[in-house]
Length: 262
Picture 1 (tube, rainbow, N blue to C red):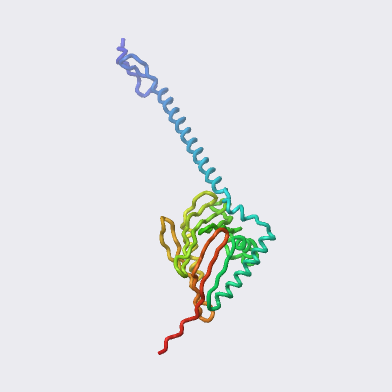
Picture 2: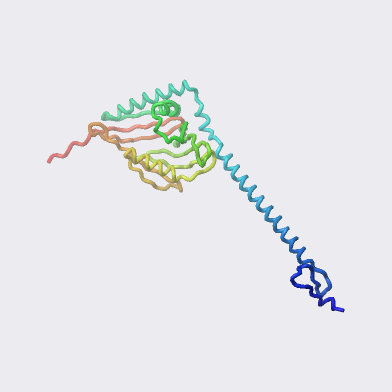
């Protein structure tokens, strides 16, 4: 009779084996059980990852759909008031353009309501190609020392409200400083690279020199504005102030210097 402890079945059978302690080990059955556990765990992990990704995407979508309070408050102003504000803005801009062509001091005040009226009426009706087609309904909010810009746009296949917050100040006579604080789609922060590029391109198209520097980690655009008007007169912006709901600016226009005698 064969020794029980030395029993060794056909190694290719994969059915059973005897241990030296006399215990029967179901090798094939145990391997199948182990594989089943691995598959279950893998399925649970995969489902959890899909769920987390779905929750994250939903959270990003919800964040992108939030409309900034300043934007919603100025977007739906009465159309009659918008027309009146737009007309006032155009009248003030016409007077300012005339004043800066004359030698001497000049000044102007533009209100938030006038700017938004012009954006809602005159820009849309008379300057339809001024903005990229994916940008609509631009509006501004003016606070003490800062400016908020908002518009509807498509970002990453989503319709959202894009907002830009910046500090605006006069760095030196004739040089306007724009310190960019944030760019958001809804409440979702966005990289500033595209905005910086657009500011540089806009300044270049208008013939303004744009320099960049950093302040507290924020990018700052320094834009030199010193146009020469009819007759060679030199225009200098001497003061730029943003108060609650309005922008005040003033400056001087000087006659060209007489050429030196030979």
